Image (cartoon, rainbow over all chains, first blue to last red):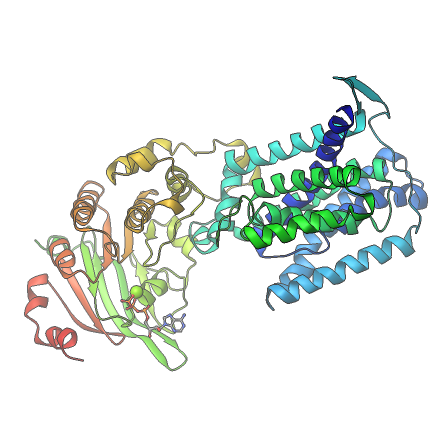
Length: 292
Length: 256
Ligand SMILES: Nc1ncnc2c1ncn2[C@@H]1O[C@H](COP(=O)(O)OP(=O)(O)OP(=O)(O)O)[C@@H](O)[C@H]1O
Ligand SMILES: [Mg+2]
């Protein structure tokens, strides 16, 4: 029983990371019809950038973090939209998606060749350790990951639904033509979603790297999981991505313990196939609608 | 009565002069001229595909006209962006539904009435409803949408969305509203109330309307003057009575 509780918490912690990545993925899809196949690499890179700044520039850690955050927002928030999405979007959804695949390979190989092929320690704000609760041993880091991610997601949700800018973002996703007529600067709103996506990726990166170490190939698992989470949840809904992230995280961890760790990676895919077969619009999704 | 007859000195609110819009070989709008006077309700009728919606798109700057000029209060507005015209008090409704489907009726209305300029910071810190909740409530009551105020707009029936669309066009307190088939898909009871609402806003706020509509009874009873279009050109302009008696109009509708 206590093992089960531990697995649930670990599942919620990984699920929270997947949810962060899946929500960013969904936001960017909604406002700009970009399917970002580099989403996993977006989560991999910020931690590597921090370590690279420490190693090559001998920057103290806090400075390295600031440099990584600033650089990543500029390159993969603003730059990604301006220099990859905008020029490619003219050619359609598919060429754009393929461009993001190319970007994912470029990011992965650059991290490998430019920094390190080995997994590296990444400093954690939360000390290692555990607390006892209901007879179960709960990792402090898992709890911290879960709490930080949930606070970020709730904050984002409040921003999107309760502020004027959030409503303008929703309007841009739901009906860009009318949004523009009303005077909403849709370009700025789209840029904002790209910056939010980059911000969520940074957060996910800083949360997961202390646990799984920072490695160039981290994006593969996270990217696939986020993609599956987004589809399972309904692809075009933030709350769908959130639910999808947690479901994939839980299934992932429970399957590793109770089924077989060898098949661990396959189980979310099985889930994906089931959803596509029985509820192709996603668990929470609705057909042909775009929502923030 | 003919509102324009009483207001000849003030000049037209809107003047469309020799407007043309060609899509390749298709002459969708082909030299249209007319004037709209302060406080009047001008109807535009004509067969499907005669260029009515295209004309609206050109007036509102969603399409750049091939030729011709549009003036608002004597000032050239040809080619200005829709958002700029919106700021000058011109708004529109759409022939095809154009609401924000996943926002509630109230949120749709508030969004339509907001000033969207200003800095990111002022928007973030300012009140989310921009003080428009009261105005939205008024419109909700006015268009009988009270029971639907907190429903998602996408879940409303076609006719209800049409009413919401009209209500949204009035949120910013416009001087001139272009309505593209506001009665399309609206049932008879609602139609009567829509007409009544439009007349009330026209009187109370002194707003000027241009209305595209296929429903003849609706147009003829609502409008002070009617423009008849056919194949991108103006076939006739006159009072409802004059239009009904015009042989060319009867030909255009009954012939072809
Ligand atoms: N963007 C466009 N590109 C090419 N042709 C267009 C475009 N928009 C409209 N047209 C053509 O212009 C003509 C006029 O269309 P428009 O929509 O203005 O007609 P309408 O009078 O509003 O018709 P309806 O009563 O059916 O709404 C049609 O032949 C239409 O196919
Ligand atoms: Mg039309």
